[in-house]
Length: 431
Image (tube, rainbow, N blue to C red):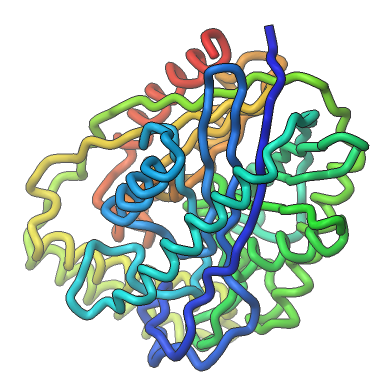
């Protein structure tokens, strides 16, 4: 039987000050020159009977497990929540500060980390202070025209916008937790102004359109092979606003169509799994791959009528080969694999499956196919750490950037699929 759900929602700015190194692009040169739009921490605090939990969404490229665990411990201390009931997800902006996606390094600015952590804790305090009983509504809709497959733009992909909305007394919209599968990469490596990029722009505009201090948090879905590459008309701030408006308008329309229910279940569950690394290669083999990719780019640049999207694909394949070389030289693959957590969050009949990396889009369909009738599921990438891409077999066989750059091949996605099915089943039957 569903219980009364109590929710608190808040956001606080986490934009660093000064000129800082930026994350996201190997080709970017130089530190930030300023701020185009603020970066935010958005937080949801939940209580339903004996179940409690906290979800934090950050406008960052990603977060290394070290930093995620550090935040969870600090949040657990201030809230009396077990650390496993605190979940952290990132929007994957490529125009945010560097350092959070890597383990501690001597050159990292300690004050940036400390201020960010302090602002996150302040956000949680605000959310706790405004906790109240809520009504919950869930809905999904397909949103076209923003993004598509990174190699084959005409290929059919999952572009489902998933939304859970919370209303407090008087039908006041309190907050929205949303999910959409897209790389938040309208802006390119030439941009040196801090920005939440696509998901940040869409969330901010949706908040403006809805008014009444409604907090809108957009999480990154199964977007390992999904981006705006062939759909953006440019890589400037005007295009960011255009694409952000498409997504924001879709959120607002969907919320207006959702029916609310007075009670809803809530649960956070975790499932440990071992993800195998791909077989290692010799340094000489990978150096040969790098040379082949560079030759492919040179040939492509001589071809008449080549498009920016095609050039971007070729450039990323070189980047992927170089990242593979780094993995091999550092001996990462020799360890055989890694132990990690899958995270499941249930809010009413909405299910989020959190993954510590970038799963390919097919994973969203796999999860949806085994989700019981009457429930609405979505995949939340970049959650509680960052391990890399989770490519499918096609990407591995064809040597795409994501498969080259990742320590995993398609076997990891199979493990994630099998373990996610067990996790979803547990959430839907025992929460």
